[in-house]
Amino acid sequence: MFSVTRKRSAPIDGQKPGTSGLRKKVKVFMQPHYVQNFVQSTFNALTTDKVRGATLVVSGDGRYYSKDAIQIIIKMAAANGVRRIWVGQNGLLSTPAVSAVIRERVGVDGSKASGAFILTASHNPGGPHEDFGIKYNMENGGPAPEGITDKIYENTKTINVYLIAEDLPDVDIAAIGVTSFGGPEGQFDVEIFDSASDYVKLMKSIFDFESIRKLLSSPNFSFCYDALHGVGGAYAKPIFVEELGAQESSLLNCTPKEDFGGGHPDPNLTYAKELVARMGLGKSGSQGEPPEFGAAADGDADRNMVLGKRFFVTPSDSVAIIAANAVESIPYFSSGLKGVARSMPTSAALDVVAKHLKLKFFEVPTGWKFFGNLMDAGLCSICGEESFGTGSDHIREKDGIWAVLAWLSIIAYKNKENLSGGKLVTVEDIVRNHWATYGRHYYTRYDYENVDAGAAKESMAYLVKLQSSLPEVNKIVKGIHSNVSNVASADEFEYKDPVDDSISKHQGIRYLFEDGSRLVFRLSGTGSEGATIRLYIEQYEKDSSKTGRDSQEALAPLVDVALKLSKMQEFTGRSAPTVIT
Ligand code: VG1
Ligand code: CO
Image 1 (cartoon, rainbow, N blue to C red):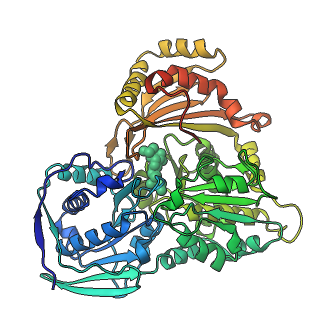
Image 2: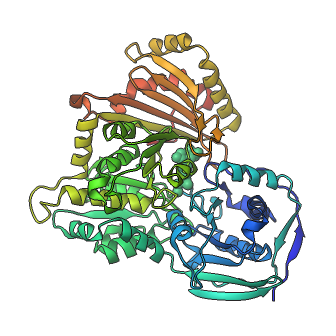
């Protein structure tokens, strides 16, 4: 029988959860009591009645330090009166799979989970010198709302004791099965289960796997998926190869690794180098004919990048295209969409689709937690973010593999007639046709990573101050480029949740132009060091004869205005961004 130890502790600075949980360097997490303080603060924020007797999930993207953190959380859960802990085999569960497991899984004894610790720093690199992270998800399967994360943070500032079952032996997380322990308050179980099967079952209930299978076996089509050595690899093989019949050679970097093979598990044109080359994009060009479709995921597999042959689909376009085609292509949506939503910095491509299809539409702050409330209230079916996040109300997280299956469904639907011969309707055709119907939102994001935190704050303060005089702003804009349209309004984005009326302030600085163009500036809430400034630039082109331009070229004047108006170089000391997406 294990016993409960009350360990004395003291607050550790900086345990404020960001956009998506607490993310820091591994070394920071390895400090004595660091994980323990955060976990106990989370239990305390949830309150004892929610924790005692609960079934909780603990798993993540398998990055370095996950295995140690899992054992610590198991021991603390036991000591705090949790009844059961569920762990994906080897500690692996993608973020969308955790959400699915909370919502759908029934344990061997008929139990259901009410929350999860997800161990990931998502798209940030992993390894002893890189990042680790912990985030808590609630019983709806979505990230804890700000009310809870604020409480967690407050608790970390006053914590002086945590509970842990130090004498509980480590659990073998590689072996599927249930291990039971006796504690002062009764039985405590740890169940290790297959990481993929619940998620695969859910995907099969949403999509028409038979039609995707036909597409993947068509001589007209070719496919490739890059998990960037993240946890997506644990799902890619069972879904794409075993269920859908893709060749094993179409999977790249699909073995999950603690350090993501030394790479940056962020699915964009900069970091997904191998895929980008294979798809015939980028400088190196391809070795042979590129596949018709390619996609990549981030470390925890909630993000996706979709590519066609020599063609990049912006995430903002991707969600708009999925929304426009979902009802006819995806069985789950066949009775219609309840509504759609995007995060504020995401382009307005989805707005145009919503208007056209007369759908409810919502613009929320960055971060997936805001979509969850809308979905729980039955107001939103499909949503997305410019940061390679797309998803639906099947779970309460963005879902990288879901997005790939959505695209494959659309391609399969558009090619119903010509899978055995005839000309394939390609990814590029689908996107260009979409632009011809709805117009195109030229879009780019500039990231300035690891900028001095003080300088980043000052630059944001400057941009807010500038907003007090629009005539002054327009004088500056016209001085930079006389043919860029006028700034019609400027503000800091504030969101009132239509379901619970909670208010989130300071969610990004906006400059809105008369012609629908937008500049948005905000500080990242997911970095682990210094500050990251994100600049989002968008311009709408309705004239279908002008929707085919090169994006960076079309946006050049507006980019110039953004950089000069914000005095970006002066504040950051950088002449160029770290990453452009
Ligand atoms: C970034 C993205 C945001 C996303 C968040 C979590 O946040 O911009 O859209 O929801 O990461 O994604 P920020 O605050 O750094 O801009 V994940 O896949 O990293 O959990
Ligand atoms: Co992620």
